[in-house]
Length: 86
Image 1 (cartoon, one colour):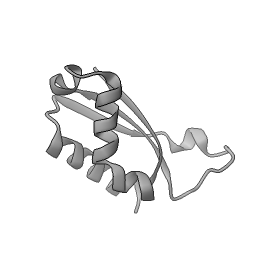
Image 2 (cartoon, one colour):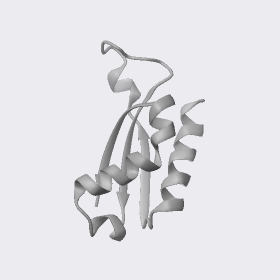
Image 3 (cartoon, rainbow, N blue to C red):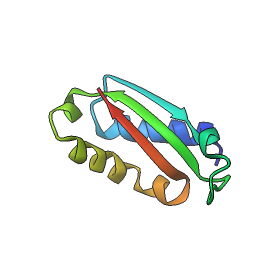
Image 4 (spheres, rainbow, N blue to C red):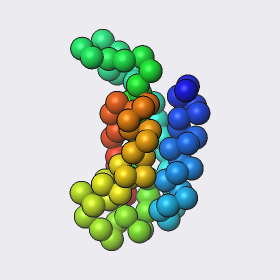
C-alpha cells in the first residue's frame, strides 16, 4: 500500500466513526528514515483533527478510540501515530 492510499483509508475510517469538524493527515516517515528499525513499508503519520465529540472525553480515551478504529492499519502499515486533537 502506498502512503496516499493509507491516508485516504485512515481519513475515511475516522470520519465514518467519529464526528469530525476538520482533519489533516501528514506523512512524517521522512523524519524517521535513518532510525534503527525503520521499515520502508511502515509509515509514521501525524493526525490533526478538530472534534467536539472527542473534546468531551479525556485525551487517553480519545487516543484509544482512534487506535481501535485504525487497529488493522496499525498492525500492517503504521509504525507510529501522532494524534493532535483541538
